[in-house]
Structure formats: C-alpha cells, structure tokens
Length: 59
Image (cartoon, rainbow, N blue to C red; front, side, top):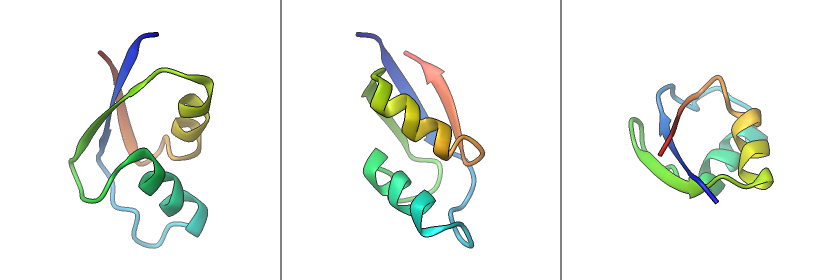
C-alpha cells in the first residue's frame, strides 16, 4: 500500500459535526499539522468528506 500525506490548511470552525469528527479521526488537532496514512478506501472516503479543508500529497 502507498502512503498519503494530509495537511490541514483551513480551519474547521463553523463546519459540521461530521466534518470535525472526520478530521479528529484522521488525527488532526491543530492547523497546518501533517499526518500520514496508508492509502486505503476508508481513508480515501474520509479525504473526500473534508477535501475542502485539507491538502493531499502522495508520499
């Protein structure tokens, strides 16, 4: 499996509870934080939910 690096670039303030929970599940706790995950279908679905708040780079 390949890795994917995800960076939080926009604030989750005033976003829905679902989007905030998705960011927490991805491992974000603050702005401009970068996390790395395996590129699985579950992670791809989570990325799709919050795509307007994050930046994705293939590692």
